[in-house]
Each structure stands twice: as structure tokens, then as C-alpha cells.
Amino acid sequence: MSQPLIIPRRAGSATSTTARQGTTTIGFVNLGCSKNQVDSEIMLGTLVAEGFQLTGDPTQAEVVIVNTCGFIEEAKEESINTILEHGQLKKTGTCRVLIAAGCLAQRYQGDLLKELPELDAVVGTGEFGKIAEICRALLTPKKRRQRIWMSKPPYLYDELAPRLRLGKQHSAYVKIAEGCNRNCTFCAIPLMRGKQRSRPVESIVAEARQLAAEGVKEINLISQDTINYGVDLGIRQGLVSLLRDLVKVDGLRWIRPFYLYPQQVTDDLLDLYAGEEKITKYIDMPLQHINDRMLHRMHRLGNRASIESLVDRIRTRIPGVTFRTAFIVGFPGETEAAFTELRDYVEQAEFDRVAAFVYSDEDQTPAAELDEKVEREVMDDRRNTILSVQETIATAKGRATIGSILDVLIDGRSDDTEGVLEGRHEGLAPEIDGVVYVDEDSTDAGGKASDPAPGDFCRVEITDAAGFDLVGRITATAIH
Image (cartoon, rainbow, N blue to C red; front, side, top):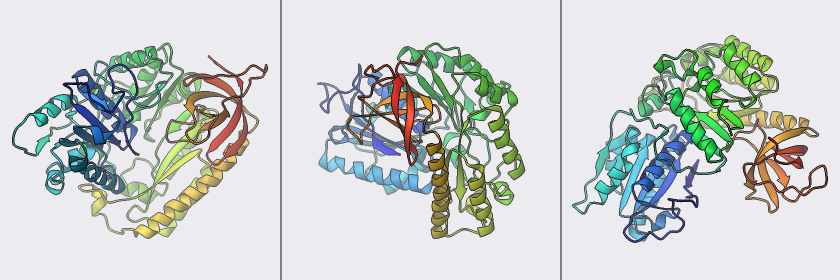
């Protein structure tokens, strides 16, 4: 996902494109995943705390920072194109300094500076806490020289780090760990983010309390490998321990963990999901493939039998669970028979949400050296097939909810349709899943006009389904 960051109107943040006298304006563009968004929020909070002025219009910024993504080929291309685009602001805007930060910067450092003379600096994933210091150094009058700020990525924010949150004020991402210890052959994350480093439970809980005090109702727990949380701290069943403490935080309504690896899933964890009201009945677990040979080549633990058993176990122990997963198509050696096995499994398993990614060779990963490459056209066709199969499943599942009454968190007014609100039930994660549309002027069951605000929970009767989205009417507001 790519977008200029819209700076929210609140204390300490920019409310216009004009800098206060004596301050330096910063324009920011965030690329990539929710983990990148948290990094951007930390950098923005640090800059504000250090006296910089933020602007939502990069054409008016003296310093432009692009927080890059380097996960797959398309993401790298998007990052480079964004840097080139904003490099033009040195000619057409007020830009004096252009910085590339984040994953792509961490991986390619000198290559970026060599190939992109527009850049003044690259800032790696271990330097986010120094971003204000870096900006000041680059703004100091002297002969222009491209610079690299890079170290091994030990940086891990805590609850004391300044943070300027973006997006919905009632929903927040909380990064509980950084890096990954897995050895998936296709993945470059350990090269960019290092080995897993978990935040202490106390730090995460303290941040959750702060967020709840600010009006946050939903926290989304993110990391590269959430199921492995705490292993580096010597905590047995670390995710279970963390969740048991988080559910005690007053004010939170939904706690949603993301990115569960399909191993080490204990009955204690599943029972916690099933029994704790605050933990959403929502499993996000990338399976990547179902064919045994493909799983072995990917260096994924387990096989088809263990995956099927786990999926059945999750659905049995968490009644009504929403299951989101992801698969890679076109991995080296994926024959037509292996893909057909995957397609048939997606059709049979009837997951609630499925993402499908086209494989790409990533520098310095073992998979890049594998033989039996699949042509891009074939990969694209396979991805489209998986998405088509899933769309049919999702449509049927949506239709099956018509007539049910669900608790819905209101996110705000729809950008697409006037007079309509958008919300989500617990089976719809922010930004990646569908939404529930409700009439802004609807009345509840007693004929009282409903007037829900963003962050309110409403009881909604589902009246229709359209693709991945639902339509409903409010029957009661302010559900607690």
C-alpha cells in the first residue's frame, strides 16, 4: 500500500502546509505493511517532539522522507518510483533533503545512493530513533554529500517512544516484536529486520493502556512471527502470557493478533481465543502452500496432513472463527499438478479470506537459486484462478450472514457513498478485509434515530451482501 501520510489535526502535528516561523517542514510517504506504518508513526512522533513541523503536502516540505518497502519485486519497484517522483520536488517544490528509510534502504544502501542521485541519505531499520538527529545533520549548511545511516537493526521501540498515530483514532497497531528466526527460502525479512527481538510484556501492556486512555477500542498485534513472540526472552507460550495480560486492560474491546505461523499453536492459545471476549475470533495464518514438495522447498515446517489437522483443530476449538490465510503461487518447481492441488484445497477448505501472492526471486534468498522457475504469465494466471475461487466462496459466505445481527465497530463515513457509514464486525480486520455499510440516518429498533460516531459499537442487522462487503441497518447503538 502506498500513500502520502495524512497528518491528523491534533496537538503537535501539522494543520496546514505552511511551516511556523523558524521550523523545518517534513513531508512523509509510507509504503508497505502495517509494521512499516508503526515505524513511520515512531519517526513522525520523534520529529514532532524535536520541533519539526509536519505537512500532508510533500510539495511544501523542505525534507521528504520515503519509508520504503523491499518485501517483493513489486514493492521494490514502487519504492524506487516513489523516490524518483519525490526527487522531482527539488526542482518543482521546496525540497532540500530527500531521505529513503526502511526495508529497501536497509537492503540496498550504497546501491540506492549510486543509482538515485536525487537521494541525500538512506536510513536503515535500526536508525528510526535517530531520525531527528539525521535530519538536522543533513540540513546543516555544507557541501552536499550523500550519506548512509546504517547499523545492524537492534532498534525496538517501547511505550516511551514518541508516536504520532495515523489513520483511525479508535484502532491502532502495536508491534510486539521485530525480526524473524524462520528460514523460509523465499523471504528476505531476516536480511532487512534481523533475528527476532520481542518487546517485554510489561512494555506492550503499558502501551496498550496508553492507547486505551486515548480512546482506542481495537489493538492489532503485529510482528513478523507473532506465534513465536517471547521465545528470545525465554517466555514459554509467550503469546498466551501476553494476551492474558492484555485482556485485563480497561477500555479495549478487540485484541487482534496477526501473522500466526502454523506451528506451535497450543490448545492453551486456542482456548484463550475461544474463551476471552476481547480476543477477536479471527485467525490470520499464512499457509503459503498445501503441496508437500512445495512446503519442503519453501522450508516451511509441517506438511499437508499437519496443516489440515491444524485448520480442523482451530475451527473445532474456536466456534465461529474467521480464518484468513495467504498462499504463494509460482514458487520454483510448482508444477501444474501442484497448483491444481492448491486450487482444489482452497476450494475445499472454504477459508473466509485468502490472499494470493506471485512468487518473485529475492536477492540473497535460497529460493532465488532454485531451478524449475515458473513463467510470469503462468503465475499471474494461477493467482487469478485462486482469487476467483475465493471470490465465489466469499460471496456465498456473505450471503449466509443476511438476517444475522452482529456487533459492528463504526470506522466513519464512507468515502465512496454519501450518507453511508462504514464499519467492521470482528471478522473484518482493518484495511485488508471488507466493510459493513450502514445508513447514516437509520433508526434503531425503537424508532430512535441512531447517531453513531467513529469508535462506537452498534448492533447491526445484515440485510445484503455485495462481494466482500456487507450491508446492514443499525438496531441498537453504543453496545458495551
